[in-house]
Image (cartoon, rainbow, N blue to C red):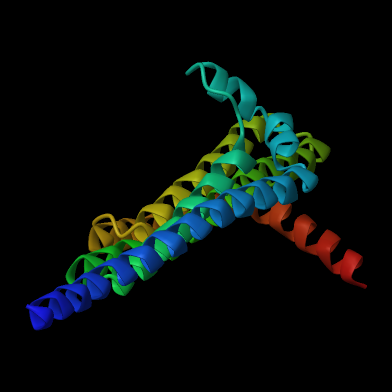
Amino acid sequence: MQEIISAFITNLSGTILPLFWALLVFSIGLFTGNRIKKISKEFLDKLRLNQMLKSLGWEDFFDRYDTKLDASGFIGSIIEIFFMLVVLSISLEIIGLSQINRLLQEVINYFPNIFISIIIFIFAVFLADFSKKIILVKMERQKMSYSNIVGNIVSTSTWILAILAILYQLQIVKTLILTIFIGFIALIVLILGLSFGIGGKDMASRMLKDLEEKVK
């Protein structure tokens, strides 16, 4: 009888102790994850990310769908989810659920792609606006009437390349996206080559001369 009780206590402690430690780790992780989210949001707010996006007109885009523009909060939430998944993975390993943990690891390994996609998107927002303004200023100085059209083409091309890069990072039909990406680059090169060949030589030489003078 004593041996049965001893074996029962041993089995119980072997089950309860790992479960206790797993719950403790997860509880601490839950609190820490919330703090990390707040710190991340405060850091991005100090960088004035939301204000910069609003100045580029993105608030109107979100208003159409009755959604508040809060990029810093969104990124903070993504970071919190990533951290909590890591904590959950540790907790599952403690209680010996290795098979479930392997599946969770695949989800965790996917998050760097999400972070890179967010960086590409933010970079594209500023690059599309900046490149359009540069083209408009340059061409308006040359008194070219189609400057707005060219500016829109450059901005749209930037967005297309960014979207293709994001889809590639998210591993959505990678082979197809890579083929489209290469084809689009080739198309841009062809269009630029034709435009310079037909009537853009003077403009190209002036822009290169301005650049050379600035470098000097």
